[in-house]
Image (tube, rainbow, N blue to C red; front, side):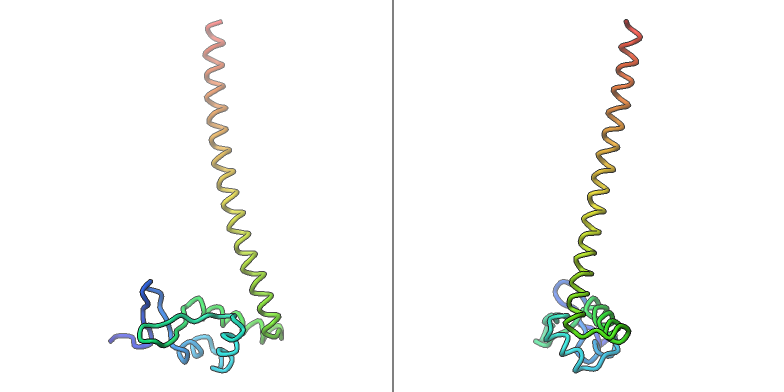
Length: 127
């Protein structure tokens, strides 16, 4: 077994044990448990019945630790900040998708305009 710290779940996301997660995120175990109780991170089930955390969870814990240490926020305030951050990311994705659709529409309209100009030019020659 090359790496006993990681166990793969059915969808191939790496799951880390509670101890490894706390160590990687540089948080105490009781902090990790409080974050879990506040639903700031949600562990998944590992094969064999234990619970594990993904890399996303670890990054979230690092973000939570920074918000607490750097800004002095409590877990309730952090929950609000994280919710607002997730919503902002969703809105940015939606905006990017809209921009892509608008760009595609603009390209179709430019193409149609070009085609109509050519057609008008041809028709004008025969008059």
